[in-house]
Amino acid sequence: MKNWLMVGVLALAGLLCGSAQAVVVGGIVSTDARWPEAVGGYDRLSFYDQVNHDGGSRSNYFWANQFWFVGGDGGYIGLQNRSGQRWLNFSIWLASGWDPASRASCGHFSHEGSGVQCQIKWNWKTGHKYRLDIVRASNRVSGVVTDLMSGESITVATILIPTAWSGLKNRSVSFVEEYSQGSNQLASCSVIGAQSSVFYLPVANGHLPATSQTTQTYGNCNDRNIAHAACDAGGKCINIVSDLGGFASPGE
Image: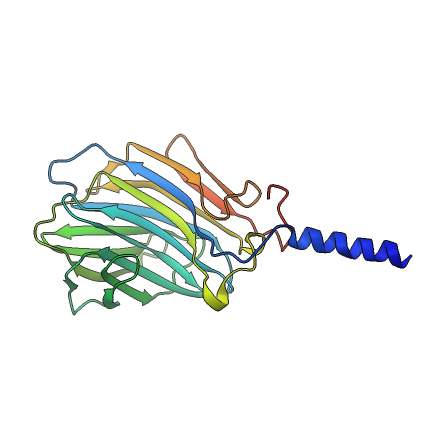
């Protein structure tokens, strides 16, 4: 009897642990949008994001929208769940500074390149659809987030870019990232917090929808039992990350 009990315990331990090991998940879903090329680039890109499940208080998720400038570098704007706290993050690589009147806390960063990062705690809500605007006026680039259900809007910050840079390129990438690290690092992919979100078709200059939008899963936890993403014919892209409750995925 004891032998059978021990076999059962070992089998359960195998299911729970499998080949799993501590992991920094990083990017897990990527959604690529394209527009026709525009001479000098676009002056505005509008992203439409909706987070339906945010992973809970033990997760650190970033739902980001990445953009680039003609003749320059790039940046991103997005919603974050930082261990249960809601934040907005707006950053541009190689930016020269920011408007001191910006509402967010801004500063220079030097990890993964260098530039300016602006962030502010703001209670965005799951289930609400948000428009995240990147607006360029000469060397001033503003990040604006609007709750399309309540109408509440916030200009996160205005970041200053080199005057030699032109408008926004005809491509963007929206992504989902779980960035828990250090003492918060996940024990394995099988304990990642469950999230679901939607990246709707983005729009350039207020009236030009992207001509295409595609999505894929990737990265350290790219397992068919964990990460799922698909777009419909209209360019609406949904994605889901599943929490396996510590049980090893049959796909590992």
